[in-house]
Image: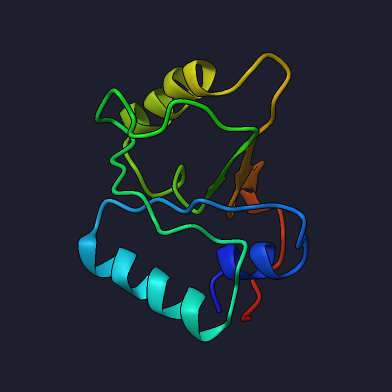
Length: 112
């Protein structure tokens, strides 16, 4: 199970709008969302983080899961640049993923 679906299952008062550049991956997200009956997940946006402007004008928060450690640095820069434009002052931009501190992973790997 993807981390995104775990997020969507637990805070039922929040609405999620996933994004994915790949058409095939968006179809998979839609299928999983439907099969899990997640009513708080919108249809995924076709968003390439470096393609500006984004297809969304405003958000209450941005949760970026498993992108920054596998994408070019320019994608992370675009995330923050567009995040500033999309979020209101004080709104969170939350990064989630495997990171290293001092050369060691910050969390133990686990299978979900």
